[in-house]
Length: 222
Image (spheres, rainbow, N blue to C red):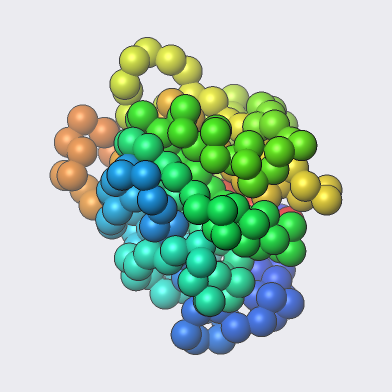
């Protein structure tokens, strides 16, 4: 896909979903503020940096701000993409489960990025959102790995925790990938401000940013 065509497709997608955040036609990505005690607020510079890169590299209109949203927030459906991360426990209230299911089945997209320690609780909560669906491996030939940048082997390894390979999972509903779960890679760490995680080399940080841009563009254009 050429850059011009990609920008056009994203803009048409934004027009289809209506107002995004406070400014029509701008891309803003809230992080999910969840219950359960986990640190939903970790890596605060990751999404602003992603949106800055989307503007600088791809020419997309973005609002590169760090802000959070509860699933119960009345503005939830104004955002075509949500970001959820953390290290600990995730807990959705009953009304949040129903609302998230409706959001995802009506065009929304959720990127879950495990910052290490999230896996057990997020799998439990997603089973409540989609009791008839399972997180399934997303293979390297899926378009999300090739939308802007090519990742023929799938997810890059960003942050090392316990030696396991990076793994991508997804939930598909009504023919769409509605949840994309990045596990054992920690993309968010890799796109934080330089120096926050000094163990992440410039090459690793670039790969993390490229993958995050793929996720963003895929979410807006699928």
